Image 1 (cartoon, rainbow, N blue to C red):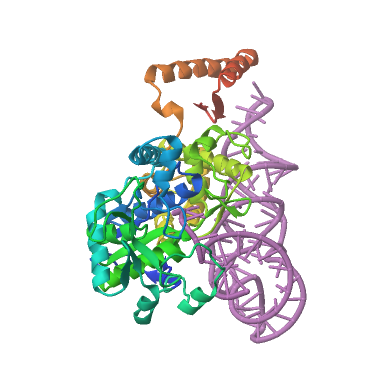
Image 2: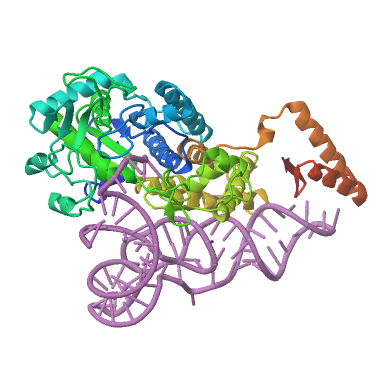
Length: 488
RNA sequence: GGUACCUUGGCCGAGUGGCUAGGCACCGGUCUGCAAAACCGCAUACGGCGGUUCGAAUCCGCCAGGUACCUCCA
């Protein structure tokens, strides 16, 4: 492939040229949600970030198999490897079956991501659908000697693993440091090492979701599902593994250890981590209670918001920052994005109506390569947007008759705008007139043509009446050099 | 306590050694019957103190403030 895409790899802590394992095919695994409650905006940011990455890989011509799991079992309330899982707890609370909880929040998750215009992954496997694969993996890890069973629960032996392979490779930490950094944790159980984690957990009689296994009835630990499912669908080694930064230290570290112990090879070549969405500088999280639900954002029903913001405004807002930077969420920042997004999209629709001239007096020919260059540099979407705004200037000048553009350049500009705005950034117009019917549009045009006549007759009273009343109905009227534009 | 990371003009946010990112807001101007839109101009920003260098927001050191991870969380 003729491109130079660079990706920041958490493993090496630097940007590396992206070279897929199998020339034009890419395997990408992203850790999905645990569906025991509504997704908040911080969760959405990660999935939108990976959507942008997925879209750009497709743009480059790769055949991408994008796997994003749904965790619907085995995720415990704490890290003590004891107690019931999150679904069972929530099920008791809402007086539902655990699978009703899973169904309810899976549907909600898909609805929200669809509203944000994210592309569905190629495969979306669930933990409960892969119990036997997980059991097989635990067996293999036991056989390789990196796990031990105590009374129906199987633990991963971190210290033994670390003797052969570096456990803290993803966070650049030594085992001694990890063991030292001890803030005394209560609730000791029968684990041998403090860092050991459960691969399989023995069920109690009251446990709602449990399956038979060689170690008795139980359920899988949280980390094993991703190892099992990524191996099944992408192979023992694949190209990209992604997720939120908060998963790096524990979940992904454990995933690497498990996969290595079972498959004797590193699971992923490139590890990508998206940064957190913050509110007043503090990470948005379920437990901190500062989470925004997407619906609250759309309707404005939140104490920190003055009003609602559209899904595409939010998507644009996120694309304006780099995925590895924290992004601070505020009413003011969203307002700025809303304005900017609207201006960009207005320019985009204006571009479609531009008249070509014999020659170009503006230079827009390098736009595509500039945008590609930005994306090739670790998916730098804010730079892409900056380039689009530069081109927007040219579009407006041509529209105002102050500059000209040739037919050839105009075609290319239209293509590049369409490709980067719609295909890569995944933004779409929310202009309601685009979906309106012809008769309705014709009626508005008729009114505005009558106003144009009145203007020509200097009948300002009639012309202003038409404009003011349409404005009062929610229309936005703009006069142009020899006509008008309108939208709702 | 340990380990990282961050601190950019009013706000958001790119940028890793010289070549003013971009958006929003403000102000001034062009255009317009008026308005809106559009366009042009405008802020010479890089937490503080030192150092390296011909030259640093960008490298190094110290200090201050903040955040994250080490406990479930995208």
